[in-house]
Length: 398
Ligand code: DI6
Ligand code: FE
Image (cartoon, rainbow, N blue to C red; front, side):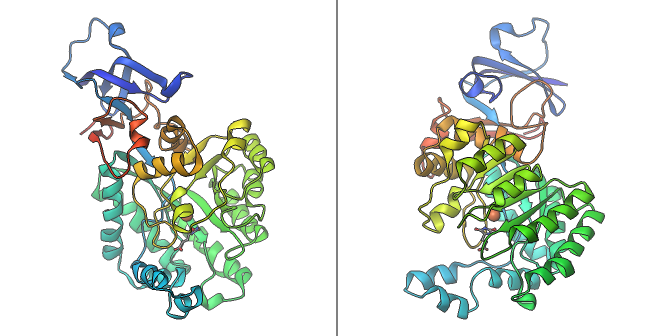
């Protein structure tokens, strides 16, 4: 049966006008899809199904978090506290802190515990209107635990009304067992784990961390070659702390996205534009690490690179699970516009995940919507620590 929503301001994010805004808008949902959208005045006269007055509220596509690490064991509040009490980076490392501690905690945790932990963050995102969450592996760094993380990510879909996209991130860090030998780790663990994840249907995409403290472009290329062989799309943590050429490598492989990109150059922006890749902007990590190098937003604009925004929710560099705060940070820290911020968590986030059925309000797309108690779309990025979600509609329900 069809359902009509009327008397809404609709930020469709489709078309060429600002926000794709439709004043006095209406929308018809049939099953899990948008069957009709437009101005109320143009509503088909023969529509006779049930209807609901939205009281002039703003309707947007449901939000999409296209870069998270919400499946992980433990947390790093202890090392956060140590550092703020004056401990050095080495003190923290000696006390077993850093990414290694999350790997240990993730290896040691049961699937039940990992799922319960991840659901806390998924719930925070859903409460702000999210309908799609991307989840990465990368805290296992052994075959068994990488697969365990991906199974837990998939299991979120059974517990909540949300769609999950998984990314295999075996090339996240070199584990203790392979210290000083990342190449052996890539051939002996990362690539076999990727093959196993693919065989089990657990990986929707392949990611890597291309950085001085992680993997070199040549090592990432080996993982990407395997991804191509398996027919999986790639994405990359690139140019977060330094410029190693990860963005151009990602573009060469036709990546869905290059993520972080603080140290990317104008040439990198050109390469992303040519490849049709999205730049995923992650202000939570920038903020947490007190980074000062701002991503080249203007170059992305000039060359027509779509920009997504995501939480990067992880226990180390971005313990943040709010897309609304992410939007505010994108604007205030990086001077993105409120319209770019909203496109970043809807239309362009869908593109960064290779999803064609969501992210905009258009006939034929999934009826994943967020209905807000605000008047102007800019209010979503403007407030800090305030959640004006009225209601979320997921696949036509809610
Ligand atoms: N980039 C980051 O900032 C995080 N991972 C990545 O690829 C760090 C993750 C952590 O510290 O746990
Ligand atoms: Fe990340």
